Amino acid sequence: MKEQKYDQLLGIETTGTQEWSLHLAQNHPYEATPYQALDVLFHEYEWTDKDHFVDFGCGKGRFLFYLHHRSGLSGTGIEVNKKRCEEAESNLLRYRERNSGKPDSIQFKCCPAEAYEVDSQDNRFYFFNPFAVPIFKKVVRQILASAKQHPRSVDLILYYPSTDYLQFLDIHTSFEIWKEVKIPRWYERNKNERFVIYQFHR
Image 1 (cartoon, rainbow, N blue to C red):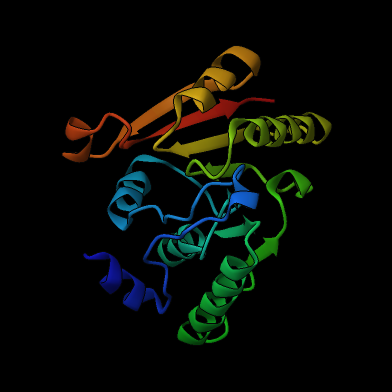
Image 2 (image 1 turned 60 degrees about the vertical axis):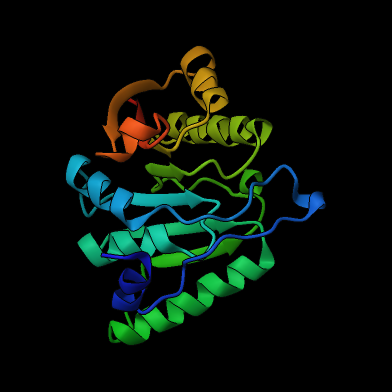
């Protein structure tokens, strides 16, 4: 299914890319995860209705709407750009209209990623290269601190992962690679077309 048609199915608008201003250079331009890639992840990665996702650099919210549409999962989107936050909220209103006022389980917070206070229920964290490595390091350390303060297993899901992200996780954290999900046909042309999933066990 093409990107625009999937958006129409969900009643949202998440296509397109974003020009970025210099004062936000530590945060990367918006680009939504392709629906085709999300379909692959959905079939290769298991989750339960008790999981709560956090999408860092959520943009217009596609990832969370997709998960709710497919499995009714709850989540929080974190976005630093005010315009993108407003677009995500508009999408949420349209999505609720399409789904008889539901869900109440999706929310968006307009703030820098490193300012988000990780909740004790948050246990699945999604990254599509949303920001520079220094911010990523701060966020991951906050996730680990929360997981140790409120013992639980947590997963990091990285799409199109940067080498710097992977090196930091491999060398400087207690996260371990659990699974790699390659996007058929795309991966053969571009080795970045994959999800790398890291786990931390309490």
